[in-house]
Length: 45
Image 1 (cartoon, rainbow, N blue to C red):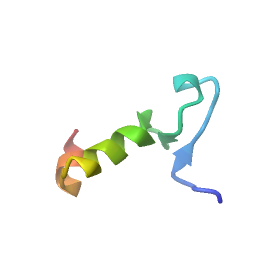
Image 2: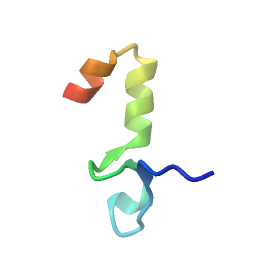
Image 3: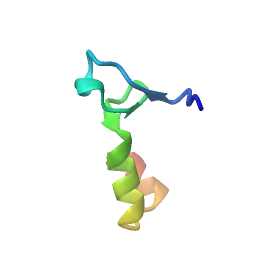
């Protein structure tokens, strides 16, 4: 399955899956959602 908004580049962030152009790890966003943060709170982070 391919995701256009998630990038994996061994030269950036050690190959950790990140949100495209933000260098924010996908795991960070998942953790924010799990903690109950709203969409607006996540976007402001």
